[in-house]
Image (cartoon, rainbow, N blue to C red; front, side, top):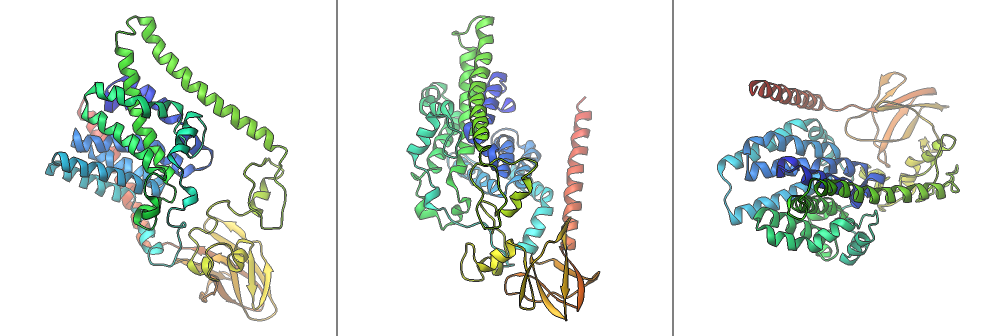
Length: 456
């Protein structure tokens, strides 16, 4: 924000508003991939703005920004690309994009490709076309918030997936007054983007029609509130900065009070959130997580300490337990949700011949080891998912995998005690991708150091 606006107060207010915004705080409670990705959104969009509108020589920063988002949360990459593409199209409609800028965007995309090659390679070799299911596609109506939900939650300053907070919703409502006075096309566009993304995050946008299109990949429309918060925080930061520089605050003391009051207001809201979190934790202490052998979902609030931490392993993941299962493992009975097959995998049930037994593997980095006793030669179907690149070792030697009806690793064991180790071995292209990505990072660091030295 400092690089974008060249104003310290605007940068400070933006940072407080975006970082301590209610949607960002909601992400911090459990949605860690998206939470980390949101840290890099301002950097990526600033670099995109530079390349498209100001200094196209900053294209390496755009490539780095997009790569950092890819490292964190793939869906955020899709949404970021959507918004950037929309900005690019609007730029084409009202202006023109020079060949030099278009080339800079292309180079940024190429750099991002190089930096993320170790992620792209296994995605292409081991995921695409390999009958691996992803997260449930489409936008579920129950997950779509109404515009009134967003307004009410934001006015209440509640930390929730349908809130951007009191200050930012007031910025959205009254920011138009400042925008009209600013006479800035750039700031008008940023303000319109912020308002538009609030609408896109709700049922006011036709998600019922678009659910089965590529746009439905995002699953949860309220994810656009990260972007709405970012754009509206720009407006808030610059408007406070203008107030700071106005004649209203014409003394050193009065001007000093602007940043102090701003910090106090945001910290007051944050302390309120922290207080509510502590109260929730205290209330949950009466709900200690208990040991269970039944298939129960984790309660929304529960207390975990050193004595009951291991009990977490007895519960399925609340959301996404079956994401990225092989299709056989997830849908072998024709049901996308829990069924006899995937429950047997989750509960560590091996099938030895026709007998079902509970097994406890020794888990190591990228592999699991099972001890299986058989009275005679028998097929052993282990509760380990099979992907391209999966392998098995029987008593220390690689063995052939047999097709399993439940999408797991199945081998033919010998009579007696068998030590079966299963794991995953990526393709050689993957290691090539790692080398290229690492060398690209090193090259960027060397060039940055060289450029800094040469500018002295």
